[in-house]
Length: 400
Image: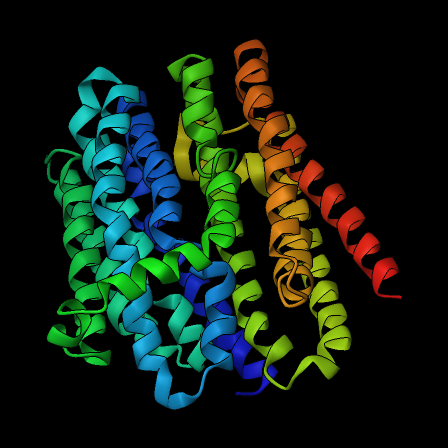
């Protein structure tokens, strides 16, 4: 698949997917602070647990699939999916309990079901489809079912139904879509009937990548949870509005990173250096656009979408800094360090970010509300960027 087609397919589809929640979020925002924060806490906790379920395949999976012989790719999908299934049950249970405990008292069930839905979304087959260069199944099995469920949930709420209907319908759509795609690749008996020991070994091999995504989630996916724990519901509501736009930007960045990941390695290591530099330039442009969008449009857009839950200008600028840093580190990690076999270096960078980001977000959100939470997130992402630059420079000097 050509670079232009790869970018168009695998960046556009997740970008549209990131827009799907906006079918319902303005409706939820107008129900009240408790519903708004309850849904956000479920998404936050579930997003973190989804990283656990994903086992790092969003980082290394496309490269594995693109590099494997065509005859072995279905078995690779089955092995990776079994490994993820082993992690999914405990992750979903923990997500439900944690979200229920952290959510406003009136929205415990909503938060719990949302957390389970998002956690099980970590079973997504996008890693495999990016590797084989097939974007259309993402629409049929993931994007379309989730969009329909979200739209249906919005209609139910507008007609006076409970907000709980939204995560319940979303959970059904996620499980149905993922299950249908899995059996289209391998027979159910072949997927579930054996090979579990091999899947455990597969999971152990990819623990560094899994740890990288999971630790990163401690200050990105869990940011809403940390802010909710550190400040009032009203202050958390403003942060949540910025976080919704941030998630959309993060999805677009991750999609471009995945799309380019297979491209930088598919013709061998000889072209890696040049392609990695081109990928970094594209991510720098994307990050600058994201920063500008947050700084110039963020407060106005959140006021239009979420009414009284809008974020202020300082929060918007800090979210923009975080977006710029994430765009750069996505490319430095996935297009340079990982192909060079430096997965542990990427892990080291996100550990450094978590060490800074988690306590900073808790402390600053307690002091300054939504602005403090955004400052904590931006600080963490800046640390990751600086550490990755230092590690990459060190690796190049060592190779020279």
